[in-house]
Length: 177
Image (cartoon, rainbow, N blue to C red; front, side, top):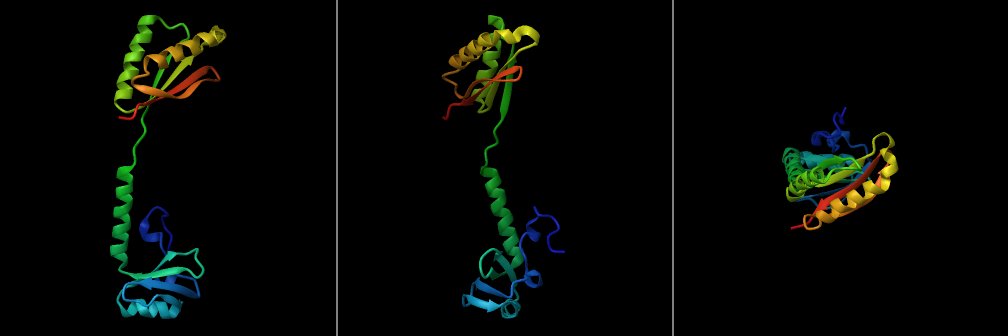
């Protein structure tokens, strides 16, 4: 079977005898681009000691390329690795407090949030309402807005305070440098 592991590049592209189309559009170096029967395309690939690889299976007819398959796979893996290294991983740090938080505790949590934002992490700040403290929803919202205002120079509010169940959540993203 050709497709063993969908993530493995070796099995992502159909090659030689696994190509099922009757005719293919052939491309490649030292080859006259055009539409050939599958047998002709395979003969051309074999003649050059290369592999016939189905590059674009959804085209009509499918596009196949005559290439050195091992070199092709190596280059594809290299491209994927490069793309992966360019991706930024988003780190989300959480800070939690109650609606009736003391001033000292509030400032303590604020210092942590500053460090997180300076480090490039997003901060998820939430007020957790335990038991009957849900009646202090407005206190929670005020505390979250105070928190956001105190962090203005370090980050910007990405999502305003919103009640979800027993939590009022707000997201703060770091400022771009």
